[in-house]
Each structure stands twice: as structure tokens, then as C-alpha cells.
Image 1: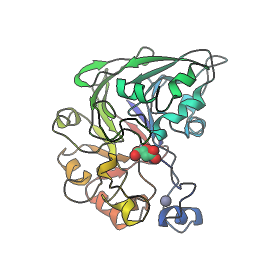
Image 2: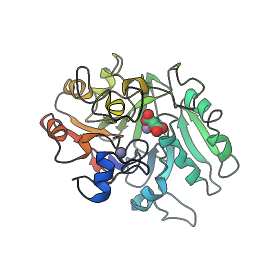
Image 3: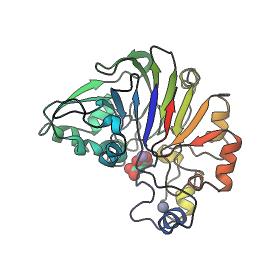
Length: 305
Ligand code: MLT
Ligand code: MN
Ligand code: ZN
């Protein structure tokens, strides 16, 4: 299985256009050891030719330009992207769909009922696409037992499960979580049995998750914040990380402690907010991750399982 990180940053990217925090300012000025990152998305293939896109980042056009296998090569209108799985309805995971509106072939969109509802009500993007390429929407089962395959994406199988996170700020039920607002997905390469767990928005590792996550050869999870109060401490937000659906890395019950329970598999943080000190390659926080063998995703990272 080939997993390619198209974008490793959380909403806003790194640097964020209006942010003057230590990291964003330092990246612009070249005074910190870090690299820029676009907003979070990965693509996965089981044959190296046909790809499933996980989320459609606002930066998707740049991401396609930077990764040749997604570019047209077989027909006058063509793409290596055969289908798109949306793990939530957040702006940073869906608005790239506007950029993928060209063509006569409908986009194949896989999402839960909750995500579909948000993307046809609070955010009308899937309705609007009906005036351009159109979409074929496919339901994603979230019982954790029912796997599905995607036509035209050979050799991959997907098993999704509902996560405790939060619906987008614009959602009519932002403060009233529903199963399916956010999902995690176990991706399996059928020919090899290799598996990757992907959950860029993960508020809490609830008891129903380890049975799925522990099957994975690579665990890619929410790397948004280092502390629960990161945005409050910087005066940027009044809400904690957990309250907006992101379990922080440090502290009791944090992502480092939780990931340690999965033993000696590859562990990668993705969807990293620009305020997070782990973006600085020489930071004390990055050194802590190193001691736990937890990697920090970057744009262009390839994971071959
Ligand atoms: C999130 O991950 O919490 C959201 O993407 C935040 C946002 O939309 O900026
Ligand atoms: Mn996000
Ligand atoms: Zn910043």
C-alpha cells in the first residue's frame, strides 16, 4: 500500500495567512527549523495507479501539482483520483471539492449521513457541485464491522468507525455530537493484508477503537495540538483542544500516552496546527516524540506498507 501525505497541517496551514505566532512568524523569516505544510489530506493506492483521496483540502490543486500520480495521463480529461472519502465535514477537509468541479464524470464521494447532511445544509457544497461535475454519493457504514471496497480503486478495503470529535463550527449540531460527524478508517491492502489506521480528527480513543487500531501496521492520528490549552494560552481561542475534538499530545490521557499502548508499530501525527511546537524540528517537544518513536507528517511524505 502506498500512502502519500498531500498535506500535513491543520486548518489554516503552516504558516497561516493571518498568524503571527512564534512558529508562523519564524517560518516566514527563516528563523526556525521547520518546513511549510498545506492543509491535511492523504491519498492511498493499492496498485500505484488508482488513488483514493482522503478529504479535499483547500490546497488540493497545489497538492495535485506536487504529486504526479494524481495528474492526468490517460485521456484528455483524467485524474489518478478515483474516489474521495470525507472523514468529516470540516472546511479544511471539504472545500477543495470546489476546486475539483471540472469535468463530465461525477465525483465519487464516500461520506456518512451526518457529513452528507452538513454538506447539503449548513455548507451547500455537494448541492453546488451538482451544477458542475455532479456527485455520486456513497454511504460509509460506521459500525466498525462492515467493510467496503471502491470500484476503480483495486486492492484496497475500508472499515470505518464513528469517533468522538466535533461537527464543524457551521454545523447545525456543532454542540450536539452525532455518530458519524467524524470517522476513523482502517485501510487494508487486500493482496498483502497490510493496514493503516487514519484519523486526523480524534478527540478521544474510546474503547471501541483499539480493536481496529491495533490491527494497523501504521497508525496516523490527530496531531493538532501539543497541550489542551494551547490556543487559550496564546490568546487565540477560548476553547480547549478536547472540546473542539482534538486530543492533545502531552499530558495525562494525551496522544503520546495512548499511542504507547499500541506497541511497536509505525506512529505518525498528521493535521498539525501551526501553533504546535512539534513543527520545530529542534524543539524539546519534538525530542519527546522522538523518544516515543512518534513521527510528524510532512507534505510529500511517502509511507509504503
Ligand atoms: C478543526 O479541525 O477543528 C477545524 O478544521 C478547524 C477549522 O475549521 O479551522
Ligand atoms: Mn481541521
Ligand atoms: Zn501560527
